[in-house]
Length: 258
Image 1 (tube, rainbow, N blue to C red):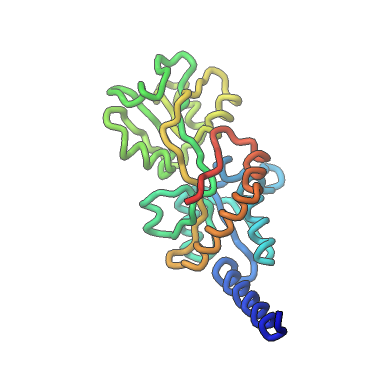
Image 2: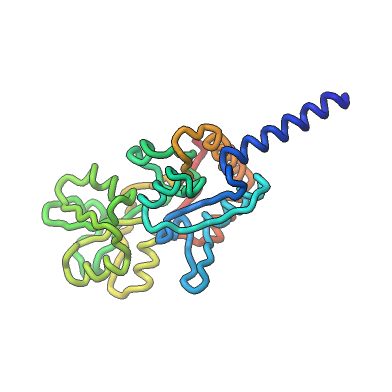
């Protein structure tokens, strides 16, 4: 290859790398936030604050490819993730896709699908998901979660109790007090909840497959394009599969290419 052409290719690669860093890590550090209470995205060690799971592994790999340091921090809820990205205190947020959220931030293609279902008391007469949407049935979901947004659009007869900050501990108390008949969230949370608390039963069906994606500030087209290529790459290489296997999550699978 002629020396001039080789130099031109090298220069082009440097410019491209710089553009990628500007789009995703403008401060020189890749700053990433996620839903701290959602094991589908990641887990936070209560004693050390260390983050593990898909968000940690994918962020580390992305930062490695960008040749920048990284910082991963949990957010308390969807609103906090959206605000962190919009206010540029985070460069990337991990979030499930919903059209209402896409009005505020730009989404990458999904990297995984997290299935949502219901948990009921073991002695509940409800045996299947088809028995949920009936008059008199009370379903609780964390306000603003993807499952909550989906059920608010699809439940016709059951009563949906959309409760801010509702977690498995609170849902267990509500089920025990007969304040609700079912709790709706992702299957990973439900499986862990059933293992922690006696007398609960996860329904066998899923009502919704939630697309887990990454988000950037509105209008960051270059950032979205690079994240889409990154997700294609980790999917094709098998890295994404190893991430999900290591996380050992129930009801989570790799999202197909989009």
